[in-house]
Length: 462
Image 1 (spheres, one colour):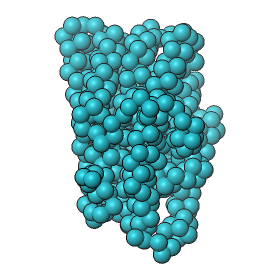
Image 2 (cartoon, helix red, strand yellow):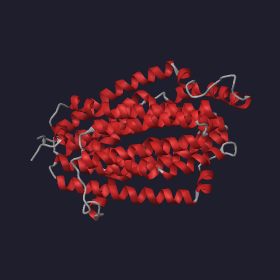
Image 3 (cartoon, helix red, strand yellow):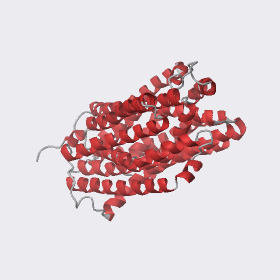
Image 4 (cartoon, one colour):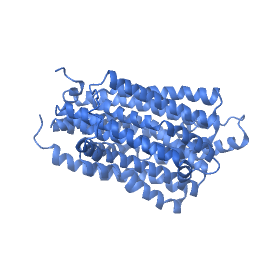
């Protein structure tokens, strides 16, 4: 039998493997982040700050449906990685087939519900009258293509689990580049405004889905057949347990987004919602190398745990935290020194703008830099929380993975956002972020250290 590429996860040096896995993931995330930056900048400069607010209120719902694929992809790929690590290629194939069916059925059903009850959801998500029309236009068109995004997010994680991160990177880069070009064409050149922004996003989903479909037909070692895509209770249960960890985390993020939009609207105004839209985009962009390290870590840990090479698992944890920590400190310094430069990308202060839009943009530029600094205060320590929750998920321990993945957003950030603004106003929202980061890192670090001493110290290395 020809040696499959996934076997290198159990043989190459951990540092080299982590770089091989993390760099393509980081590049892909970087390009996607640049896409978000350009997208947000185009909206702010060519349509206005309220367009950013509109996209910000729509994102939690569309994000959650797309995250169905991410959850099934990450959860199922944990099972798939361990199956490949133990040499059970047939199980890996069945897992992938069931991932495909589950993603299509669940995301398709949610998209249909979202379209049937669009007026209810737009109001529930926090759209205010000043930008509700923008939000509804964007919402409807993006939902038409959300199933493609969900399928692509699932497939991307399977590609990475196969040990082929460069293809996963390309799958993220192509739609990002396409979306930037289409934004320019449809918004600026053809003048379609918010509708153009939405169709650019829809087409970018189709590009990503098309590339991933091509990969699995032509390049993958997991060649599906009709038998594989039939749902099997045992496989579904195994996928679902681990997928629920990611889905709960992403669902909590979606709830957090809805809560933030409503709290910022209540204690501030639509410009504070726009500020958070910008901060959210900067978070995604600035943390791309840290998230890349985290994504690169998971298949390495899962494969070696499945192969009972526990010393390699322990080494992958230490190396990932070290690399990620160094990157996080550098990011922290850059944000603290250059907040104004980041914010100025997203809004224009050209005198040619109409007076109302110009006034809004200037106010956003005034408010957002200090908020950005506060949100990033705990950046140097977040890698411990990311690696800790990812470790338990990659080795198939559902309950600790679930609880630790919810610590920041669910256990700390959401309660803090409810408690602090009545006393501190909008400032309370921003302060809640670093407090939640520190508390979740302390808790995760404790449980990760205990697990490493208890499990990975056992003399079972191969």
